[in-house]
Image (cartoon, rainbow, N blue to C red; front, side, top):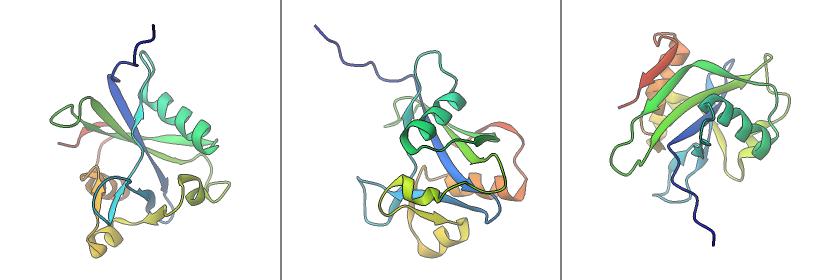
Length: 150
């Protein structure tokens, strides 16, 4: 007899960033209104650090090697429909630029956004606090470490 996988204790949401252009990749969300953009939510295995889970996902799903996880991490608590803690991590290239066009690896419709473009277009983003996290990261007013995104 097989049992379903238990619900993960945590998820990681890797955000692929281009620090030089101050933009990040989002993909159209499969469920939600038109104009709804998101980043993947990846289950973290029991005992696995969330940074390692993000790197594993980017490497296995998209073939992105040579990424570095930025020291700023957004934390979304397990409340409401979110059944577990989610960690929003920023994945940047280890060198000055990505070695390949990474937009295509996130699938059809993925695109680069700046926070100004998101606001000007009036689109919804999941998690909804992602633009604020990105502004704080780009402008340098967020300290390193885990930041609550409540």
